[in-house]
Image (tube, rainbow, N blue to C red):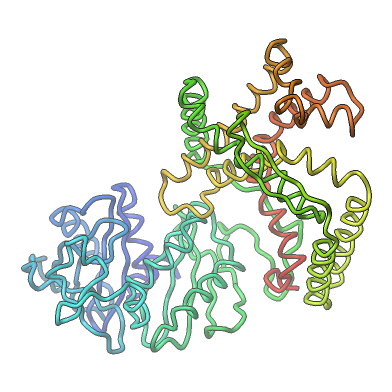
Length: 512
């Protein structure tokens, strides 16, 4: 059955797809639900959609389709990210749309089971953005979601899935909740339903018996995958029959390495990286701003020394050095109880994953490597090296967060994260190049802390690596240059390393 035929029969998914295809060129999206013979449509845009143009477009399209079983339409408009409508219109499918007074605006009830009505007389006030009951009392968003309000559920799911660049639409069909996921790249048919299920079980949505999750890719007119299951059960995704759909693992077959593909790099990623580099370069070129941000690097540097020392049994205390500048980490004699705690933690992990041979083998490998490091001078060398090592590690984490949007609620967070990561790299590149090219700067570095404590590269060169000082600095500069390259590769190939993380610790998500 074609998309148009399904829409003419009143299929909500088909109507949703057609409306979104019609609105996407104008930067708008539509959420569609049905209550008896009433079709509820909520249109969202970056700013409040124009009621006249939107209603004219939708009225004309529905008049041509004449979906079966529907008598009237309730159309609502609101800015993207808000829960409540700014305007509403109602009309019979055989008539023309007529605006209704703002005092009559109510939250679209897309469910067929009883739900509390929420007044919008205060809906446009940012202070009451959670909603209000008939007595004017504010209702938290999570409470609205527990009561089954589809817009509140969609808002909370969007917050969870926004890091994966997935938009959510929600509507009720009796006691079945329909969740439609749309992304620039196809939402993962094995992970996305589980994420939705976990969030809905946390909310304890009233009246929910069956959950149906459907995945689309932006620009496609067809369902790519769909899955129905009861909350808490293991969903099994099935692909729709369409030649335009990319190949998927057969139902019941575990996901294999050969099923994976590198992540598509969207234009937004390049924009974030470019803007982050521009801001980082500006901070790096202005001496005062570099000085203001340098305590962040000092803090990360000393935390690297302290964390590595604690890992190998040496209690340590990082601090700023207000006498000679920079920072200093006070390290105390080894406490074997700390080493025992590490082995105990590895033992607990081994017991927890005792039924997974691959995971047990990996934990055993980690224990072997830790033992070799702990009982040789390599542990002391790592404690010295991981000051600068933590700087690059944190730079990579910040940069990856900017590229992927992981944990970011607002677009500006991605740019600022990329800026922080790239600033640390630029700062370290300047530090290393000055050690190579400036005799004065190198002489000051060789003096150490008050002539008593040597700096990291001096100790690494003389006591552990037994290499010329310049060679150690060159290795550091190469590590600085490798950090953004490796971070970019980790982002591009993240489907592969996430596969192995799941394969080790949660293989059921892959069908094993």
